[in-house]
Image: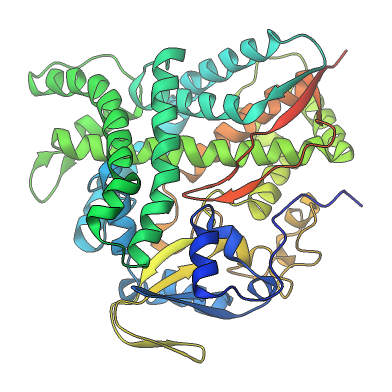
Length: 457
C-alpha cells in the first residue's frame, strides 16, 4: 500500500466564529474539521454571510445541473475576481454567460486544441531544457517550474507569445499577491469589515496586482485587435485568432477589446493556475509512489519509444492519464465552487434564505468516506473500471453546463508535461519534506514542492 499523500489534519471539533476568522484568513482548508469529510451537508454562519456546504451527490446534481438557474455563480466571487477578470465567463451568469460561452466554444473545440499542440510542445520542450541544466540528483523546487511552464503554455497557445523569464516573474509574482489577498478580502467582507479598513489591509495591493496582469495581457492583445479592425489578418493558429474573428449572431459584431481582454485574463487564471496546481500535486504523489511511477515509465517507453511526443502518443498512455485523474481527485485545483441561492429553498434539513452562499466542494466530496474506499489513499486503478465510481462524486472540472470549457486542453497539457518528465527522470520527494497544503483560489503547497530528479539511464 502506498504512503498516504499528505493533507491537512482536520480539527476534532467545529471551530468557533472567531477561530474560523483567524484560521480561514490563511487558507479555507484550515477551517475544516473531522465531520467535514463525512457530513452530507453543513453550515458556516458569519456576521455578514450564511454559507451552506452541499456534500451529497443528489444535492450536488440539483445545484450544478437540475436547478442551475436557481444557484448562479456567487456575486461575492464576481466582486472578488473582477479586478483581474472583469466580466468573464468564469463569474458571469444568465444570458451574458450563455453568449460568452457560445462565443468561446469554437476556441476550445478539438480541432483548435489539435492546432495549438505544436505551440504547447514548444513550451514543454523549453521547460525540459531548464530542468536539464540542473546537475544530476538535484533537488528542484518544481512548483515554481510548473507555474512558469503552464503560464508559458497559455501565452503561446492563446497569443503566440513566448513568456520570457523577466515578464513571467513580474506576472506570476502579481498573481501570487492577487491570490493571497483575495482570500483576505473575502474574509473581511464575510465579517463585515468596513471598505476603508479592507483597503488599508490589502485591497489596494490586490487591485494593483490585477492591473499588472491585465496590462501584460493587454500589451499583447491590443496590436492584434487593431490589425483585425484594419481588416488585416495574420497567419496565426492560436486561440486569440479564434476570439478575434468570432461574431456574435445577435449583435452581428465581434468581441470588443475589453471583452477579449476579460476572456483572455480568465483563460490565464483558469488555464495556468489550475494546471500548475494539478501538476505539482501529481509530481508530489508520484515522488512518493515509486511502483506507480515505474509502471507509468514503462508505458511511456512502450508507447513513445525514442520518438518525439505526438497527440497520438498522449491518447495511448492510459495509465499515466489515470494517475493524473486520481491526483485531481485527491488535490482538485479548485477545491470549492461558490454559488448563491437566489430564493428561499431547502437543502436536506437546512433552510436557506434568499442570498445565502452555497458551496459544492470537490475537496470534500472526492475524499468522502461514503463514496470512496480508502478516500485519502492514492489508487489510480479506480479509473480503470469507471462503474465503481459513484455518479456525481468526481467533479474536478465541475459539472453540468458550467463544466470547464478547457478540460480537454488541460488534460492534453498535463499528460504531455508528465510524460516528458517521467521518460527522462526518476523522481523522489526530498527527505523529510512535508507540503503545507493551503486552499485559496486554488489548492497549492505554501512551502513549494521539493523533488529530487535523477536521470534515467
